[in-house]
Image (cartoon, rainbow, N blue to C red; front, side, top):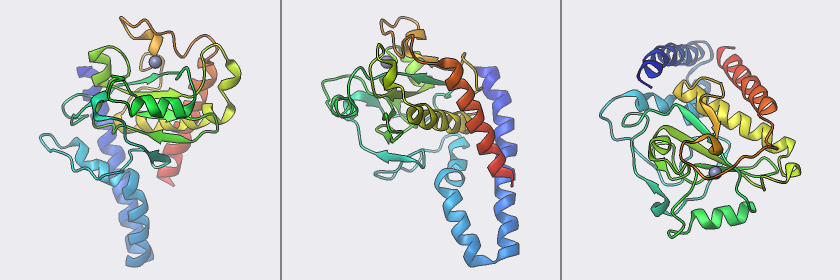
Length: 235
Ligand SMILES: [Zn+2]
């Protein structure tokens, strides 16, 4: 994890600078009013993240704030996650893919239940809707392994592992966009070492996302979404 984060930090810094410079140029060319609007839009997902990299800072939180612009916030019970200051206290270098083994509504219900003892950061619905229930700053109890919980973001997918028809086009695409954004934010490599299934977490007895989850397709979609994202940021 140490070496990975060291090399990743450099890449992220240069990308951050590019982003700032782009906004700066716009401000000069277009004028203050338009630039202010542009900055506000970028700030939602990018500029506010600059202070994530400053060590020793307790990050400000706002009720209902999401880490992914496309997500709707529904709070999980605070018994199902632990307050943290990631990625400063724990580096994030992994995304863990889950399947809910139930409906979207039942997943939301159990994540809101303090007795459940588990919840993930995100749930992706069959229609592609994304719900965030725990901040990426915090450690969600989703992987059944303390180390993996501390270093990962967990994404649930509505459906059952033995029902391939549950994994819709909309779900794959929405989840891939979400994973691409998470990986871009923390400089997580887009490979199967870092984007894993719950079944691959050491010590787990869970089998999700199961044999019907199409990893080749998913990884292609993640890489395509990442390429599109970085392309948009430089034009
Ligand atoms: Zn799982």
